[in-house]
Length: 141
Image 1 (cartoon, rainbow, N blue to C red):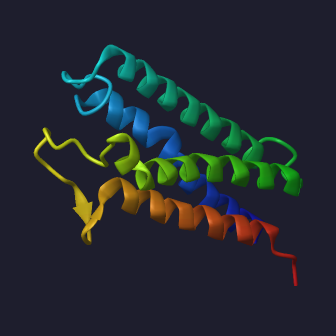
Image 2 (cartoon, helix red, strand yellow; image 1 turned 180 degrees about the vertical axis):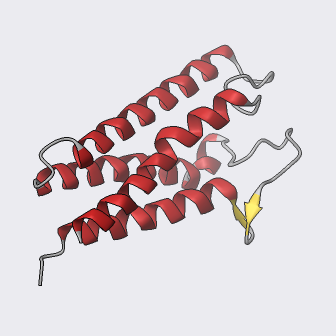
Image 3 (tube, rainbow, N blue to C red; image 1 turned 135 degrees about the vertical axis):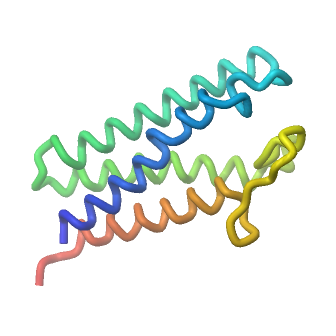
């Protein structure tokens, strides 16, 4: 069960490793948003670099570092949990610091089944991460 579990974990990690930098740097909704303060842009690029670096490290641990070691699988799972957990913490506490899950000036609230697109995507990826992690840790029968 280790390979299917690692594939699920890889898909979940690819979501936060590759999609945000592409989406946030290729559009004017984040880093290049005309209304953002320069200091906020620095924090955004910092976050993109940090989460992508964590994702690359987690992928390395999963696939290229002693493939038989559960320590590496578990460390990759913990790193992914930190990234997704930080997102959900920021989303749940947005009202306390004046944050929002989407840009009201952008005019389009993207959602799937009534749920914010980021929350939906990161929820599905978190489930995949957890399921894959459990599969990797399951004892052979």
